[in-house]
Length: 119
Image 1 (cartoon, helix red, strand yellow):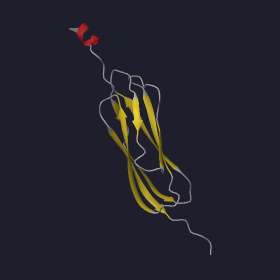
Image 2 (image 1 turned 180 degrees about the vertical axis):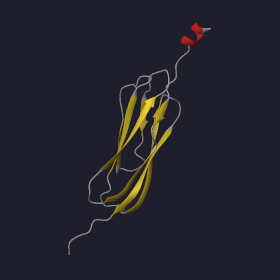
Image 3 (image 1 turned 60 degrees about the vertical axis):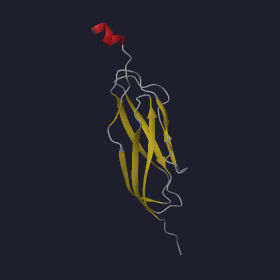
Image 4 (image 1 turned 90 degrees about the vertical axis):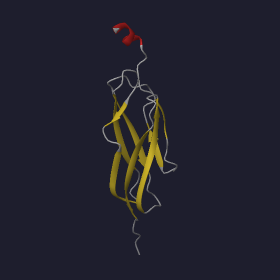
């Protein structure tokens, strides 16, 4: 029975420390801000991230490990948001596709304060 268990194909599992980030108040002229989402492969097979969406906006740029993450190892997905030319509350999410078979969402929010111009 033990031999059968070791022959069975393993499964990757992605467990995030947190799946949401609040930037709070940010300035529309303060430059880009980045949220980092750390995760652990809690499965027993290498985790492969297939894609991370940009949330449908060119103002959001994700970056993620291109190499497989071994079982028990940690990884990080970073999402950079550019508030330039925007104002008010925002709430966005990106979708993570991996070989775990489960799509996951990473959310971020905040309030963009318009920059003041000198008169």
